[in-house]
Image 1 (tube, rainbow, N blue to C red):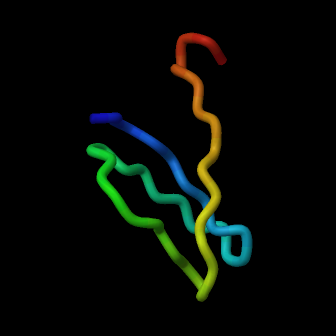
Image 2: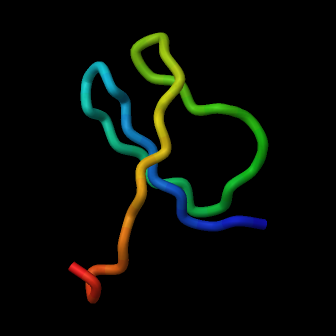
Length: 44
């Protein structure tokens, strides 16, 4: 099982972090949310 994916709404900018990834698709403002790349804080 995958862990820790981050998604962002392209309309309102809402950000959601999924700790335990299951099935399905996240939606916000009536649209599917986009998964965004995240990097460990030590790499920034």
